[in-house]
Length: 400
Image (cartoon, rainbow, N blue to C red; front, side, top):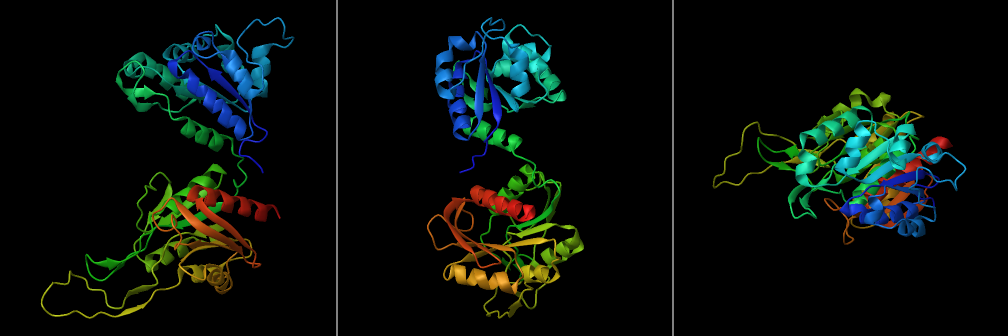
């Protein structure tokens, strides 16, 4: 199985803070994901965790001596040259200040001055130290020079204080590293992702809709953005914030969604319709709120335009079109029909009758069906993993 960090050389710098022990777990997880990890420790770091611990975890010699006569190579140049990424975890106030001012009085600081790769710094310190104006100025200075900071979290600190200064969660650090090291394999793609739930209004305040949250759309946007693609989002109602994407447009109804898609349909190389578009709308929408009285109120409904089918009818040869479906029965059979009727390349068919699957959840029980009739049962997977799986499939399709 291909791992996310296969073939990547990561230099892990460990400085002298109480959270240095957490870097042991980070090194283990990096290796588990396929990375080759070389650890460089400061002398203060060794007061908290032994070099032997990291040596056993990584399988590599731990570097800590600027003047190691047993090594014929210039250690700080050699380590700087072979790294794909350098992460300092944890980074103390002392270390950040030295780095910001170009001081190189230990091996790790020399490496940072000699490298041309991305440097990620994970601060961990007392809240008052972190908020100190001098420290913040040093952090700002490093950021202006391209250093990335993973901000510390707020909570109970080892010193007894409560506040911002605790090392970011290791899982979040790992996730960030993976994103930075992902290959930009889809950098030439201009992708449209639809997300969330459409709403069909009866009057000024009442509507019919569905429980779609937009989580799947957000996961797709994050995954494809990490692979270098340009992201465009057209979304109905969502429970997630999509405003961080520059090309984000919000709509209400199915008609609004189709009209917005039509404006630039031919410019998209990949279209992923993850939005849950309502099948029906009210035939006669009332402009004002319908007043409650003793009389019954009858209304008629009519079919909405099939947005996905309309896109499929206009799809060009080089466009990839992906649909999503939510079913409670005959999931695969219905998916195969939609593939054919709507001119899709792939469909992600979700069985929402399964426990833990469906609208608003963090996972789906998924079948992946392609235009040749091939079916893969992914089972219950997180929406992040489904997005990654789809991106892998599209990469393969583009390569062929």
